[in-house]
Image (cartoon, rainbow, N blue to C red):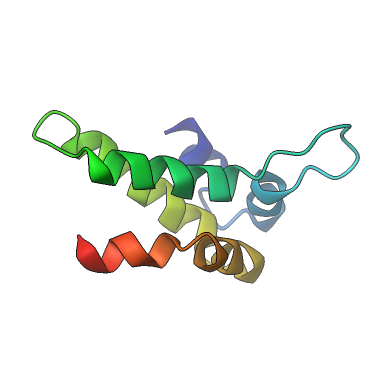
Length: 86
């Protein structure tokens, strides 16, 4: 949820930062990591984890709204595959 809130209001700078933290010693692509996490949640979704799956999906949507490079990152991580199965 916190990651989603960082990107609210089409904050493009923060959305880009979620993908790559330039100037840091080590970078973490939180966009693709969220997609990988969603794949695990999707494979194990049940009544108890449904709200978690929805929250992760909403976060991924917020990452990608108006941010072309994040959209490409989700596509490259094959994040669209499980969406069509849902």
